[in-house]
Length: 92
Image 1 (cartoon, one colour):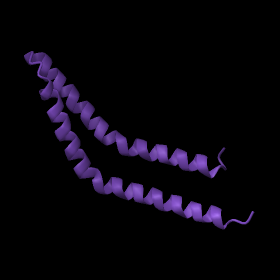
Image 2 (cartoon, helix red, strand yellow; image 1 turned 90 degrees about the vertical axis):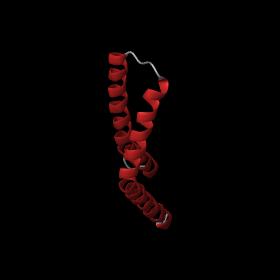
Image 3 (cartoon, helix red, strand yellow; image 1 turned 120 degrees about the vertical axis):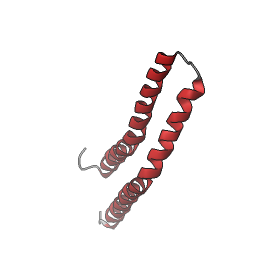
Image 4 (cartoon, rainbow, N blue to C red; image 1 turned 90 degrees about the horizontal axis):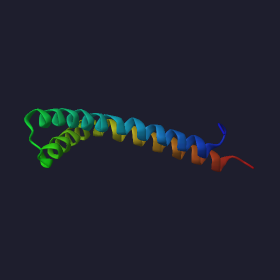
């Protein structure tokens, strides 16, 4: 299975997706935990109080990490296109 280019591309795509997803998810997890503790301490059970800080944290994280994420996806796409050309140029 290591020699199969499709399996290799899929494995790399899943790894890239995991690398790109963990910073925003970790930020939302941290903010959600803090807001939950705050709500438990004050006994304020307002749903928007839990949602809006998560939304703001997600916007900040994505704004800060967008250049790195873009470069990572561009690099993966470039490698994928090079492999496609190599496979197509290989005589059978």
